[in-house]
Each structure stands twice: as C-alpha cells, then as structure tokens.
Image (cartoon, rainbow, N blue to C red):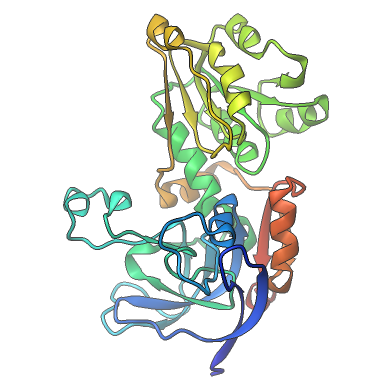
Length: 341
C-alpha cells in the first residue's frame, strides 16, 4: 500500500487551495480510514480558507461532504467493515461526556469536531474519520450524487421536516442555488404547496421542472404581497445568502408562519417587531437534520442534486466557481477512486 496521498490544503489563514503530497493518515483506535471517492464543495469551506472559524490550525484540508469506502479500521472499531461505503458530514465527532452529549444532543457537543475545519476533511484521496460521524451510503447512490446530500441535503430536508408544516400548506423556497434547488424538490415531495422564489425569469422553467407549483421572480418586486395573496406562507425557507432578500420576504408569512434561515448572509436581516407580534410569526436559523433520513428520503423519492464534477486537482477552480455562484448547482470533487467506480 502506498504511504502518501494527493490532497488539497490551505497552509495559512487567507491562503490558497494548494495541491500537495501528504502522508496517508493512520486511523486512531476509534477511527476508520476512508478512501475518498467524492467530496462536495460547500460555502462552509470558506471558513478554512478565510480563517474566520475559531480555533483553526494550519495546514488544514477542507471538505465536509465526503463519500468513500472504508480502507482500514482502528483497533476499537466495531460494526463497520473494510470496503463498506460511508459518508461523513459537517459533524465529525463528539465527546459523549459533556452535558449536551449526555442528553443526546451530540451536535451541540462542547468539544465537537467539525470535519474539514477542526480535523482534516475530504479534499484528499484518504481521510481519517471517527466512527460516530459515519453514515452508510447505499449502493444505489452514486458518490458524486451522494456527497451534497451530507450537508446541503441534510440541512434543507431537516429544516423542512422539522418545520411543523403540513402537507398542502404553502412553503416558499427563497433562492434557487445549491441549497434551494434541493429544497424545492424536498418541499414538493413532502407534499407542500411549493413556491420557488428567485431573481429573473430564466429560472422559472427549472423551478417548475424540479416540482415547484409556482414561481415568483423577486426582481419584479412585491414578493411579500404576492405570497400574502396566495394565503401567506406557512414556511419561508431562506436558502439565499442575502439579508436584504430575506427581509423583503418576511411580510409574506401567514399567521403562525415561520422563516427558517439555512444560509449565512453577510448583511443584517431587518425584522419589524409588529410583524412577529401581529400574527404569531417567527424567524429562526437551522443547521440540523439527520443525514441518514435525508439520504433515505432522497433515494426513495428521487430527489437528486444537480452537480458539476471536478477532479481533485481542480479544487481551487471549483471553489472559486462556487463562491462566485457560477456552479449549477453543487460543485463536487472526484478522486481517481471515484472515477473508477
């Protein structure tokens, strides 16, 4: 077995994504070694490149939408086998002993490991991962299609699944990018009356093809009024990273409606208190969701991400296309192992 691997790392805060040769990591006693086949590129990876997430040490290999096969097992690993297909998302492990873990709130662990940020991620041919972070990947799901489900899929499906909305109620998806194009599919498949909202008429055909029952061009103005004319949204799922766009949509919430923010915006969200008080409306953020449930529902219902695939060596190009919103709709890195599958 070879001792080195090809990887893409950031060497220092603000540094570039650079292709390097690294030693293949040895799995610790509660880890497995994954031979990576595909890794999605997510906006969260910018935290490594820009260094704004606290406690990052460099060099660091980004990537938290990882699919591959188990290549080696740590000494204490049970229940997993070599050759098994697995995935790893944002949550890379927990301590089991803090107050949050004792209550089963592992994603709120006080010593949580974040894949690709506090530990090396999947922009590499191999990565080590803790067993509690692993999820099985069905053979029917291609690696490049499965990778985005580990973060983008989990986040949007989890937000809708836990929103309290019932089948038939109006759900508006704000934004039709990497998150939004999945959210529209999930909302329609979950039985909601689904309205896709984006800027420009050029996305209308795609939105309807993905399952939306209606499309609103936000560039035409009057978004809140148009949603209100439809009866008001039970949920507005905010996938567009724009505080201004979210602010303009809030008036379209119906009584008891909820805006759920799943994408970080650089500008503030303006929320008139009277809007919240007058109809029991609310706004919240959501980054939770069960990866296995998201994958299972996606496979069962036919929800699939639209991806652009890049070889590992082109990680910098793929990242820049993602950051400039030129990717339609998720960028995925594929290793030689993934190409051979």
